[in-house]
Length: 400
Image 1 (cartoon, helix red, strand yellow):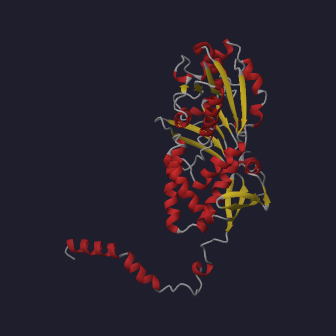
Image 2: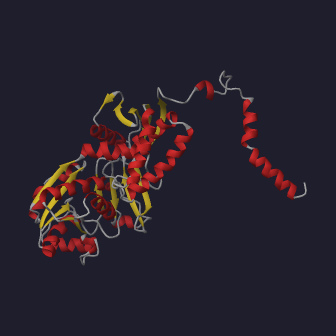
Image 3: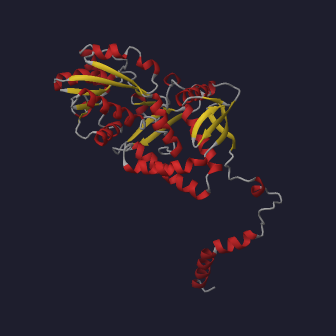
């Protein structure tokens, strides 16, 4: 039997290789998706083979991740519970997609993952597998074995001489990719605890950020960011550049107690420096290029889109249908947004587009040629007619 394992080299997946071989008597093929983890991928193959994997695939999926997962989410304006930019949620379906492809190439019968039975990621991985190849068996060790905590997983690793970097004093669960960095577990489970500065890896403390603001101009074409300050970048390069600049200025930190799909609340700390800048800039560009009704309706679509992604339903028909709507709205979301990064904040200070629906001669408080202010009286009478009738009825019922 062959099992394809989603492998990060962290505590859980390092332990799982040994456990799978002991309990399923199987060959374990490890798969790591390179989504921009950088040094986390160092010496990964050696580690995977030493802990029992027959081989390790390290798949560079960075371009596909940005092009086919991050940018559609950005264009949709998806944000979960007003804070979370879905960095983990949008990575899981891509990883699962590549794992299914490798499983089919290798003739594997099953796919395994290291997600806990309390989290969202188990749903995201497994729904993707069910959508792409429902014949594959799914093995979720955290729902089968007798290990009940990360502390016990660390003990298991020590007993079997499995090298892991997690410690009982700081067993944070960390997920990193081009879009974000997330931290869960450990001391963070106390919602009153303020994280130490040494926990953050992508952003400076706002207090120690530069004392001078940084201005950037970001150009979008049909909702997709193409250049910064007039210099064009590839999608991956652009995001790396923004991560570096925004991170330097302490932009993109979020401390969130969120509602997990499985029903419990969970605290997560997120760093999304470049993503925060892009999200705010894109939103502002839409403010001048979308008409009122489309913009208001798209806000509802964005909320539903975020739920779909958070719940692991990337491959659901509804997500594809909403993409069609979003693509239509982005046809004229082209232009430049100017932002100011300063002490942990991203301020939008300017926006312009050849498709802008904003007209100074209409908006001005000075005399204009296109709008007669006297017309507003008739409009208000018509618009307020239902309220007026209601008011008359209420006064009549009081004998007035």
